[in-house]
Image (cartoon, rainbow, N blue to C red):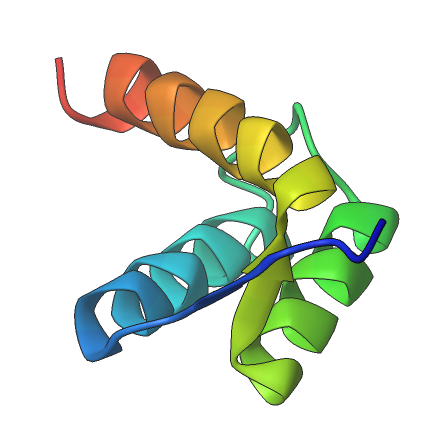
Length: 69
């Protein structure tokens, strides 16, 4: 069965870049180099798969809980 691709829009790309900046600056110590590589590959390909979707959603929740509250 072929995995479905979900294409990034501009706002999603901007958000992922913000996440990467926080990680690279050391402001979000929960994630490291492997996460940066994974996010970078998603941005370069401009899509994410079903298997990456839950990972990205949990990262979004963590971001909101860490930086927006």
